[in-house]
Length: 469
Ligand code: ATP
Ligand code: MG
Image (cartoon, rainbow, N blue to C red; front, side):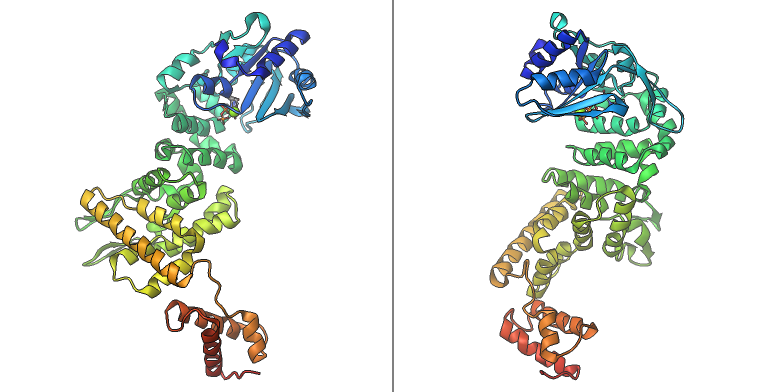
């Protein structure tokens, strides 16, 4: 194991631990990730039998540049940053839980007590740092074997582990997704039994884990586990609603739950943008609400893009996702997600292209990625044809953009100019005239030029009984 402790920092911690006479280990995520050769982990958790704060202070003192130690007295932990590493020190502890809180009461304990309180066997692995035992592995729960077999298993009875801290259920799904591991059956059953206890977890913690699932390589794996264990039902009922197929008169619609996950999966191959992935998750979110069966026609979901975009802020607010421009971006993509499809089917007019360029602006490329991911037909010929159509749309958009520069465009006539010209106060009429000018340019009635737009403004003003002052 010594090969995994090459980093200079471990030598320094080792010396300090020996000087203080503290039994000291590197534990948890760091050990797991180096053994998996996942990535060079940037956060290191150090546990010692004794005062973690004292050890942290000594290490900081010895390090070049003497980094500042942040002490969290209440938790008995200390943290320091060294180069690009974030190192946390804690004294080994024993925990006991009350039913209504995930905050345990804590007392000092042995290393074994500390390993017992951890969430999964693969997260309990500890490597000793003291000189005479340097690199010795402590693995009381066969975590190494689970790491090799790809199994998520709790060190103690899973019902106790999950009930004590229900966030661990989300973590289980997250690790299974990130590492492509399997959650062992008894653990899955315990999650099903304890899913309701997620209610004592703050939404911020839940969404942290969910976002990590969404950012994984195959996020749909996580969503299927969340759904099957009913964890998803606890915090994201709108998404659960997408599940299922209805049949009327022998006609069925597709299962929008699995369709959405397929879209997310397709898209994830082409982007790591969390918010674009969120747009995929929400693009059909209003399908259940807008679903109708129309005689002679079959299933329709009229306006689901519009209703869906209205649902975005509501969902973001409840899930404690940011209510800023990220939310607006997701909203915009949900609203526009059918537009390129319409364009690829019909005869494409220049004005329709200009409108899409104007409405999508700088997010056009992301919108196209979403639309391409939205093709989930099993018929390969169809998929090819749709993708080809999108290629044509892309090319036409490019051509018209080169001609008109509509993307990121501001109409040439401002509200202020309208008010000045006609000497009127701010009000509905100003907005109306501004809109009419914009629409006329997008429709190609007038060119995108100041003089033409100015004359058009005078004309439209006249229709409202306004004269140039
Ligand atoms: P990552 O850094 O990729 O999120 P990690 O396993 O390092 O994964 P951290 O949140 O950094 O996760 O926690 C470090 C270690 O602390 C874990 O490996 C685990 O041993 C322990 N741990 C973290 N959260 C919990 C929890 N809710 N219950 C029990 N043990 C936990
Ligand atoms: Mg970590």
